[in-house]
Length: 125
Image 1 (cartoon, rainbow, N blue to C red):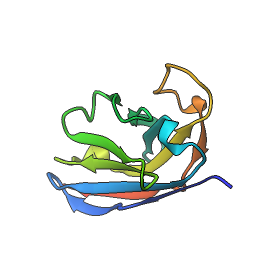
Image 2 (tube, rainbow, N blue to C red):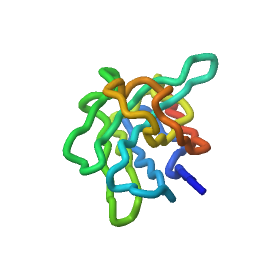
Image 3 (cartoon, rainbow, N blue to C red):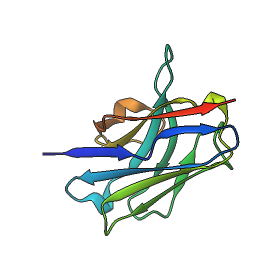
């Protein structure tokens, strides 16, 4: 059974940092394209960052580029999202996702077939 479990969310002040983790029980994890999405109240789920199976290529939304870093440890079946210089507009539930359909549209949530339950990130001003 596929399971993605996020952790590391919480409440921080503007300018603070958090590190999210996503532990995956997923076959062939080291070859899986993984991503982070987020969803704020009343808004659609939006792409945050993605990483190829070998970790060699990473992709970021413009809104987080230079502040967030996605990484992975294939030995631990875990993906991370290091978030620095957090802003109130980063407040959202953050979801980990594993790609299910091969596509170059890494920002499209429809190509991801496996999702975690989400972890809340709140940034106070």
